[in-house]
Image (cartoon, rainbow, N blue to C red; front, side):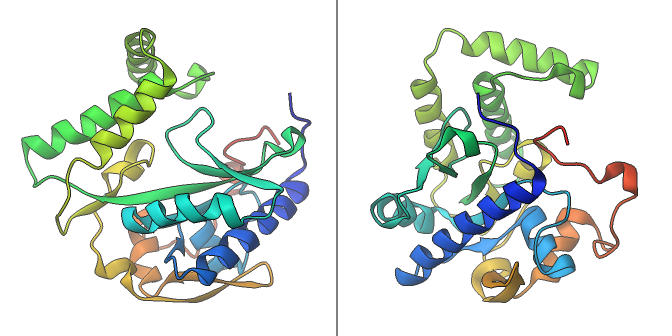
Length: 247
């Protein structure tokens, strides 16, 4: 079991991970950008949202395919790219004492056309996520979602984790072309947001903890979709909590 890190220690570790990922991506012209809470942190705080406890990055499928080949060969030896026990690839420290700090890599894939095919595609991925979840804290979910999670967990028990991971990637990449994109490995509603290539094609430099990282030129449009038009206003104090830690 890893020791409990403070948020300051997590931020320090995540900053080193982000610095390493950024260096490899720039060296090989692999496009990425900050996403979700990390993008909001760059725009609103010029660094971490004070209570955030991970880093979120976004890549197209083509960019991630290159990153997956290159990063393990050129990264700082402290770090590794792993899927661990989730459908989302992560960069983590090899030291289990620092396992609480990780960088999630979200991937943009095309969606089927609107209609029943799209609904079935998203349902398939959501079911696979439920089958792959481990150590679920059911108290965090509504009764309906607790039942769904329990059912999908039971559905996944006959299959190995490796099989489920391969199946997840196969379903995610089934649609080869299309202007409608989504974060195919995003959880819950993150997977359902519909994006378009022009929202991420042009990137600019954004401040982050003394570094300069890539953010979408259309960051206002992206953040409005993710957090609403008042994204520059912090939430009330009771909602300022870490997602992955009890701190």
